Image (cartoon, rainbow, N blue to C red):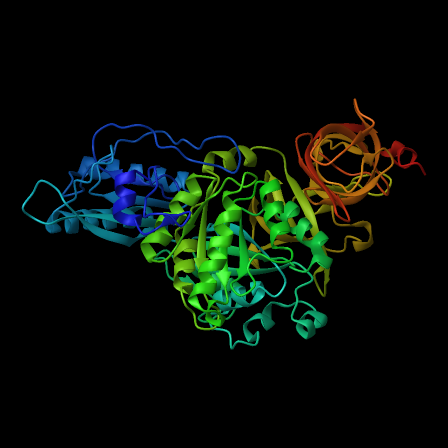
Length: 593
């Protein structure tokens, strides 16, 4: 967002708790916001999860949209279609701002006419518009002039809604499940955990009040930006039908005993971003630092919610926020904290969070009193996808690859697997192969039906999570960590692989023969260190290329995949550099059987 626009709209956001300042990037919506201003300008910078910039082609906008000719109107509609396609169904228009960031503004009649034209354009492409915010500007004119920021969002059709996955992290008893219950059920908590009861999957979770497994909850927003949850919809299918945008929350465990489950959720379910919950009355305690480190190591963008502010004095909340700001500014984090205190702040935070990997919004709220809960909803509503449509199109052109994360048996349906489609397209009736089995084979199967967010779906696209019904396929032949791929892929498997690692912590020296639990995507298995290249041993903070061997069965790995390993307090990260492919018949011999 241009600094002048940010100062006008988001001047209350305080990065690092310092003086009121705005951003330095051009505000973008999902597909790049359109400043309805000036002739030609520079391309706007974007962002994706890693290193590449997301720079959409430039389309020169107009300062105002007053009574355009038919030809001009059709051109503007085409422009809007492109922006919605780039933003996967969303775009933000800034009316009254020139492309060079000059805050010209429009008179009231011109603004009304421009919004009317924008509404006609949106109707033409099957979208709705929502005015996000409006401000008066000082310009060389006697008449008052305004600039307006407008969200354009496609009306949902045939399950083609925008879907964002948000992993929920935080220490035990920080209120993660309670917050999700309040957001998805539409009712405030009673202070004793009533809101979280519908989220628990096991009896012992209800009895202890602590999450031990991974659960999924959905929150929808319709084309007008209104919340769609279970308060006005009976089923998940109704929420999907009414929503243009879906937020899928991945509720992870906070207790250290279930850390392996939390790591699996972060590596396997490929969240777009993470929500780190911190209790205002305890501050950074328990596994909070560990969860923060996991998000940083896996390069998952995150924002922070300080909960339970109703239990604390204002000074306690401020102390917790200052503590968070100090941690975020440390050399290992290099983040720019941004405290959100108003709706303008929430809109600015969502736009800058999508553009800069260093911006970390901080919300302070209560699940009991509902204080500032609406600010988090505004943020989630505006938050654009962190990958562009071009990247998704490239993934869809590849062969089908589906990661198996969960396995169920459903009466009258048969075996069902849940997971994420890494690449390609999956349709009902597709013939795929699943593996590797213990002896390294891949078995043929057929996809009978698909469900996404608990409602029927005929086509699954790259990056989407779903459950696939496999009919009478024997469940005993399946396990977590397998992949279902297109037969044309001719997948390779390995029991030995090499990775370039950084040893984050080890009490003594890391040597040959040491056993660790390795996490690579949806793969989670014990491996032994066979060789450390160019060194005999490693100490905390050192780098090396290490050869690992899986102890139980071969796995499907890809070069370049992120790797995380742990054993007790020992932790390390890295990426796969080489895999020693083996044929199916050689698998058991290579495993040392």
